[in-house]
Length: 159
Ligand code: THU
Image (cartoon, rainbow, N blue to C red; front, side):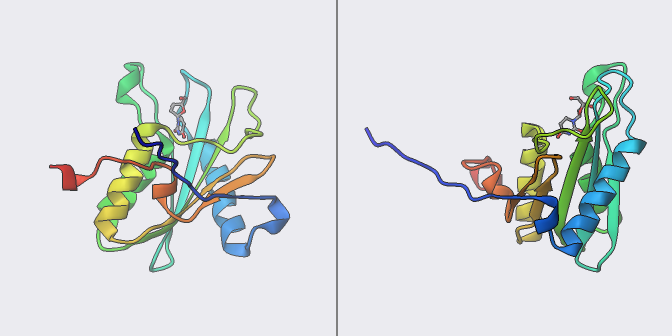
């Protein structure tokens, strides 16, 4: 038997430690929570991403009365970016969420497994990592690559 330990790297930054670009993208993700459609969970998630041409795009979670037909903010935003600008690399993605009280979460928002799988696909598709900013009022987690959010991930090399 072999014990294997996998290290991931993330930073936890307070608001005053963010650079201007990070702060701006987080603010856009926060604003996007107000455009969420979440009548079933009342959990409003917003995402904002920056493309290599400098454009920023935003999206939010979109729910459905047939629950699995809804989509998370992260995938809504990434699919939108890849469908509008298929040749533009994504450089950075910020995510923020407001819980059922209407307040932003204290803990950094944690993307679901399906969204992480899509991050990995984008990473391989664009052959470049992108930074992920996960906002919470207690601090923002920052990872430099989606691989840090999903080690031992499935990719097309298995097919
Ligand atoms: N949700 C997101 O949009 N992103 C996350 O990172 C976590 C969960 C959505 C899905 C659903 O609309 C609601 O939040 C509650 O799970």
